[in-house]
Image (cartoon, rainbow, N blue to C red; front, side):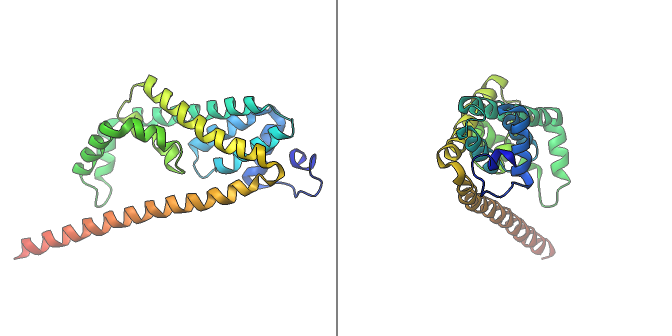
Length: 221
């Protein structure tokens, strides 16, 4: 990939997500980084932890402007978040409850508790959620379902996204050809978050099955 080889002849060509993002940036500049981040919001398996440091590294080569990268990646984050907010808003509370009712072990009371929690902590969840892998995209959906005021949603999403994006873009910018070190570090962080989420789901399932078993035992007596 010319974006890399131009400054480091020994570097191996990029492939996968990194190669795709590099192609976008080579074709349309900083707007390519913003496009990649917008798509990353809609398709969480696309890792911003790869795209952002690569964009910072590309800016360090002078091929795109650093400020332009920060602006475009934040715009991309907001565009992707608004699209998911719209999905939640179109889905609405009634459809969400109806869909949740079809999920095994999930009760209507779980939805009510979630709504109550979001009413109390929704602003913090939207802001800090932008800095948590996986959840950074998904948090926009309940915000849409609960119809969080768009002005508040946009403000929190922009600020949270700017902090997250700036952290990784600047890391790539400062590390230069060693930008991939950022990816390996964040990969560990992402695995910890994912592991915690899996454990939380397992704990929920075990508790729900345990309560169901006790209820059935009492009914049979």
